Image (cartoon, rainbow, N blue to C red; front, side, top):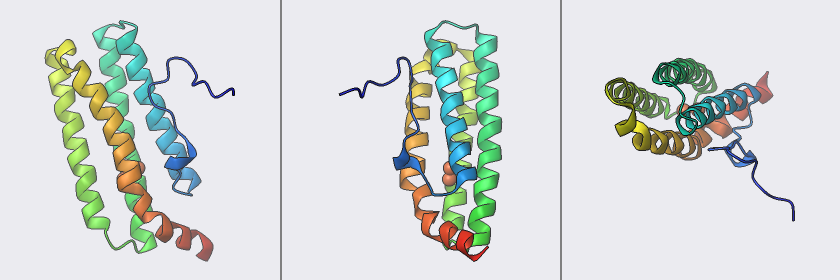
Length: 143
Ligand SMILES: [Fe+2]
Ligand SMILES: [Fe+2]
């Protein structure tokens, strides 16, 4: 049956990633889109300056996303917020480290970077973000 993946997509948002909140789902989709842009840029041999700019976009958007998520978690009474925030800080620190490595040598970091992006996005959403879903849903119902 017609279930081919669209060509060239590195990582694709599917309903398994849904946290049941439109704002957060949209932000996750945006993170996937920037990650795909990075992948396509690396594959397509874009200049280092362009790739670096995409990387900066990813970092900036990640910061923005984490802030939004932490606000939702804070107002929903999610009990493991501190642990989740620590995980965000760790991921951001890893991203910043990769950016520094990338600045020094684009090739070395290519594999690390793609692997990291793929894993942090899917593992973090599936392993951490999904845990706040029941709390955030309760908050939405109360509105
Ligand atoms: Fe998230
Ligand atoms: Fe998160």
